[in-house]
Amino acid sequence: RPGGGTLGAVDTAANLTASARDLFRKMEAESKKKTSDSNNNNGGGDKFDDDEDKFEDEDGEYYEEKSVAPHQFLASLRSAFPQFAQQGAGGMFMQQDAEECFSQILSAFRSNLKDLKDTTSMETDAEPSSSGGDAVKKLFGIEMETSLVCDESKEEIKETQTVYTLKCNISKDVNHLHEGFRLSLCEDREKHSPVLDRMAVYKGTSKLTTLPQYLNVQLVRFLYRRDTQQKAKILRRIQFPMTLDVKEFCKYTKKVGEKDEDPNATTVYDLHAIVTHKGRIADSGHYVGWAKTNGQWVAFDDDNVYPVEEEDIKKLDGGGDWHMAYVLVYKARPKKAHE
Image (cartoon, rainbow, N blue to C red; front, side, top):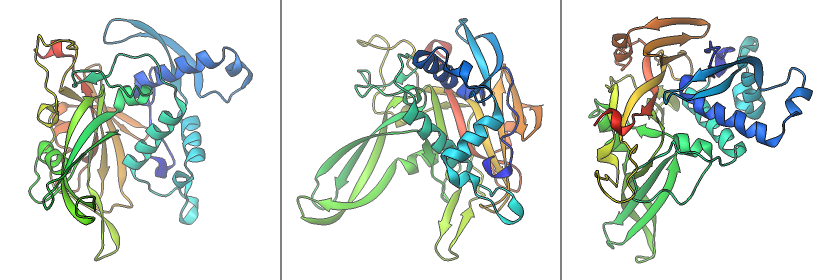
């Protein structure tokens, strides 16, 4: 919570969150490649502290991991992005948007991390992505193909892009995450038509072509109202599943036995972490993190860390004054685990 003056508690045996663990392992590996002794000359300015241990990952492999000092991370964040250092009356840090902060962090990682050899990306295309990409892209990047069709001229334009968050748009007809996905993946766009030689409306439909190891989902709860010229919050209840299958949104759905199939490719994800917002006003309120570690859900409410039940997590779907999901992080489930 950058605006609240504290980053909140972290797992001292891991990294900032369990879902970012793989990314920080790659950051540590990359830093070791650049230099073997520069950190020894930095005094107390390391990005990683001296707490170090060995852990076993979900594949049974052991790795060495260091924890991240929260205050150093927060200081770096505010230095890199001054907007998160803004202060209001009394010198208190101002409330900031959690999803925007998360996106800026991923953007900074993409700019600074080199491409590392990695096999965690889940491919849904018949061929692996030819664009390569850095470690962040392989962990969080969602490749999309958008088809834009002009009703007047019938011309079609194809566009491709990589995004790092799948949007769940909210309207009066949206009650479930899947419905919000359908809304966000279909859009009308006005652009110049080479055939008509003027601006025209194109109907757009997007499909996912490559899926990441971690699927970030944003419930678009905040919007700018022109009538009041203020940012508003949508309190509507939006149900989200503990297990998410995005197959219907993918362009390619490979079948067992097809050539070059990745045996680990999957469209099924398990809910891994949540960021909630409590309060009716967009520019205030309180953010809380929720993460699942070793099968146990844990709430990270600043320095108050406590276990919760899965039923408590399901109540974070909105519709009132309680904590409501704003950002969801799903982790890909290996195909062999759900066949």
